[in-house]
Length: 111
Image (cartoon, rainbow, N blue to C red; front, side):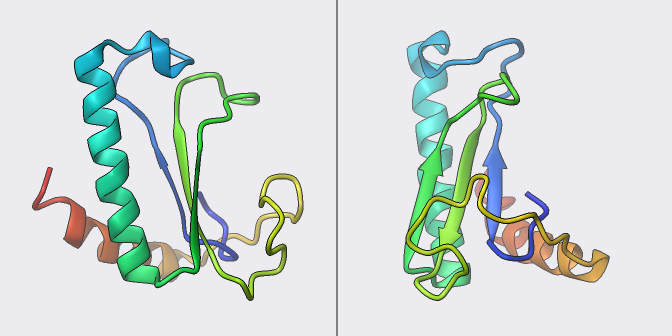
């Protein structure tokens, strides 16, 4: 998610036209859980957050997707949820490259 206020990654299963976890079969759900937990660990190790918010809302974009948002007690909306509180502040192109590089370096060798 392109918001400089929060390290935020959206995990999307590679299954078309699904909107709910129960639409996945058992193997797909297990893979999604494994990937989500791995991503969660990577995010918290890289960003040293105080809390990780993981949620599947889908009210605006119906395709099943899981938000992983690193939270800090010092962030602008702590302890409230991030949704609908602040306008996003886009990352610079350099910051996008830096964040993607950090995460992909840790994720790609595993998947």
